[in-house]
Length: 270
Image (cartoon, rainbow, N blue to C red):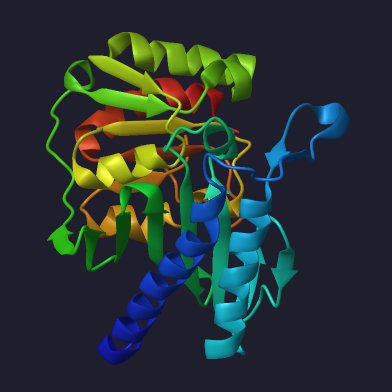
């Protein structure tokens, strides 16, 4: 267990990391961002100088403050992934939105302690929004104000607003079939928000997020403590904890909606 003082120090540092990465990214949004394609024969997979620069800034700050901590990042790989404390970073989740000039991209940062995510943040610096928290509570820091985050009550899937990034691009045929069953029951579906949708579950404006098996650790670990602190649930398509390597993801604000969705999703769990 982290002491209250250690937790406060690490939360403060997590805010600092988001501010530093945001300052690195800001000049390149809706500007010359140095787009490259790292997908090759596997298809278009964009990366920009903003992705690489932001992760470099975050890693530098961690090395200066906590040189014994490990780091796992999308752009620069692993450094001491078995350390007691490990930071897990996606400098820009939603690079496709970023290069399109749409402010639905986010910076995702999680901190593992003894192998388990204990702190998480989702930052959107262009909108001046930082969703941050741990199992004991989560907050939105925006425009000089700090407000608690709380998921909303939603009794039935037929009353739910749900989200996924792009089912037709990323879901397998079996996953797509399960998703379509969930979607057909929901009140409203929104697409294309990437991890910003996770934050909206914590904020109480979206009830359910469903994402496929291709997710990596840096895509999901920030959500686990953040959503828990807002009163929600993060799990895989079987309803079990998400593993360290990522995989299928479900985020829900209300256990009742989650249980309904899992009836369909379990059939395509991997």
